[in-house]
Amino acid sequence: MKRLYSILLCVLFALSMAVQGGVVKLAILSDVHVTPGNANEGKLREAVAEINATDVDAVMLNGDLTNEGSDEQLSNIKGILDEITHPFYIIPGNHENNWSQSACKTFNDLWGSDRFVFTIDNLVVVGMNCGPFMKMGDGHIKQEDLLWLDSTLTAMVKPGMQVLSVNHYPILDDLDNYRAYVDILKKYPVVTHQCGHYHTWRLYETDGINGVMVRALDMGGGNYGYTLMNIDLDRQWIYVYNKVIGKDPEVMFSYRINTDYYTPQVAEEHYTVPKDIVIERVVADNASIFTRVGIDEKNIYFGNSLGYCKAVDKKTGELRWQYKTDAMLFSRPAVSGKYVVLPTSDKRLVWLDKKTGKPSWQYEAAGPYVADGVVKDGILYQGGFKTFQAWDVKRHRLLWQYNDINNYCQAAPVIDGNDVIFGAWDTYLRSLNRRTGALQWQWNNGRNVNLYSPGNVVPVVTPDRVVIVAPDRFATAVDRKSGVEVWREKNDNKVRESLGHSADCEVAYAKTMDGELVAMSTGEQYQFLGKVDLGFGYEHAPCIVLEHNGYIYCGSRRGMLAVVDSSLKLVFTYRLGSSEVNGFEVDPATGDIYCSLIEGSIWRISNPRKTISRE
Image 1 (spheres, one colour):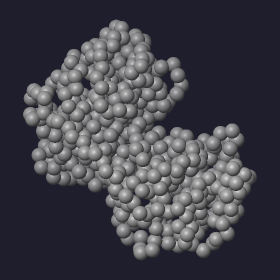
Image 2 (cartoon, helix red, strand yellow):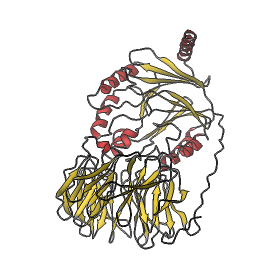
Image 3 (cartoon, helix red, strand yellow):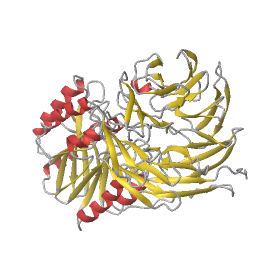
Image 4 (tube, helix red, strand yellow):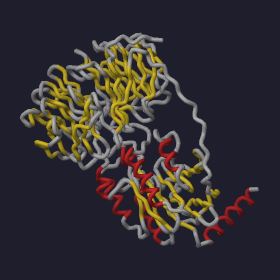
């Protein structure tokens, strides 16, 4: 039986390679993970040399070029990929987006765009970036990219033409908005969706569209290679080959093209919201939103993935003004007096007039800003790339700058008394003197692993202690004066980066990776106080937990809002959308709560000062 199967594979390979008319031949590199000097670097050079010697029509790299997405790693691999002699198309993967030194800007500077489209014969090949962008999250197609996809295919797909869709992620639950993506693709004759990410071979199907996951450069055990794909438009068959460097291609999959899609029946979800609370969408933007929102007496301020900072009227949703930058925005606009101070990914702090949005002054930094700043008493405390700064907002004056940080800051700091307390992606939690910026102490978990850093968590600060959670799944308390560890608890709850606290800071709330909310004491010893299932399932969104007027608000990676009372009983859940909730803000004027979702929406939970009656 095995011999018969091997003969069949050889016949299929011979047939597909022999027929030239109507066959589109592609070489696909995926998950190459090149760091200067590592084994993958040399093997990629060998793969490029092999591909150059073939007669393929085009070469694609579908993401994860590097390990950490640094400028050095991206520039290094570009030098290798520039040796490809065939038409070449590339998109980033999660390793370029999630830990990007440039906040995702350098990739576009080097290759011009994070999406592509080209045609070969009657095949339109379209590829797009799918994040996740600068924080832990699921894959996500930016709103503007969905619009671009639809309009581009409408213009390019003529009668008799077909489409090959390319992404780093599969069109499965890995993408938070894959349903919207599939709904667009199903309007056109898609031959297949091709992706990487999982370093494995797999065929799957979503709503009638076939999908294929392909190999990584390094599959372990000395198995280095790439993928060849032949799309026979005449016979309507696809052949996928495993090409180990130095060996003949081996057929992995062969399957008939299917464009006769079906529509699955999706059960409707019903949620009971108490009568005395109103949840309403106040903004539906034309791009994705990765920032939390700033609020004043009139407006909501936010940044989007097209680089626009926008001011929207709280009551009407009307756009007041917008200001364009040159890169995606990740930092919450900071509101102070007559200014909105905008930290940008194109390495600037921009002072915008709050009424008009016109820039009045700016500071050129050495790296991108992706952190949320905090304004207190007219001073902006702002984390940056390898720096932390204090600014007199009114006078545009830098008061002090702390430079001994070996990576970027991301979450908002806590300003309390004479202390500025924050984490960074260099493994350290720090306390600085609020007046001088001098280091008072720094703490890390004893491991030199950046990805375990408290880089995207807002600490809980009490008069005596500082409590954090981090990707290492520990909850930790340190002494506020000395930074000496007080307690450190790793338990079965699998806490991560989502943290909040009670009004008196005696209780810390942490969301777990199982979609639960855990309460713990912030006292001298770790004390587990209880937990409640939020109904989120698997969860990793670093969304802050907010307690406001006796109720606790939690957001999920898939657009779910959960409200819990002080006794840790679930009051209600409500689906805001399908993508990650970025964070919660309280309007000091009204007590309303605002939150933004990555898919480009902003929601208001109206008048939560009223008692929420449980039904």
